Image (cartoon, rainbow, N blue to C red):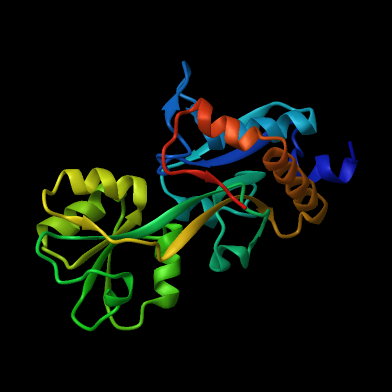
Length: 239
């Protein structure tokens, strides 16, 4: 193993992998010691195996806090949605999987198409600093974004304040629609969250190694096998 790669990704002899616990598709359970289980932790373990070191999970309740800690020494790699704002400080691999993000509208809503959402007077509930929220922050011009600290909180905000739109990941919106009879999920997607693996931008050798690992994991069928292993619906291997 190239010593530069090891010094950048496992300086203490252990790969510290930051895991976003709020992504319910990528973290689907807990192990005997409370460690996260799912596609994301398994990808981190795969990379640790390629490095020849143990993996240590560094859990974060929300993705924004994970991204904030890049370069602080809190973690060596972060498994998180790749977004331009985050990429200013994080060197991302290509995505290994992706998740559709779309909109839910309440019963009797006149909104029928994605293109009708961004209009004056429309209020969109969204989870703060999620990858799809960062997309909305860049692209919404006329509607108002109202933020919650959590995915359940965004639904409660949408429901309780009778907002016009709820933005979210399609698998979660299916659950939310079931809890609000008559609510509809709009066809299509406004973006697809690209789940990738990142490290500090200074880690150039480490970033190239991570990219090679992701390419191998997709080409070998590992990512597809992990999605099947954890029985995740709504998650697909990125192209």
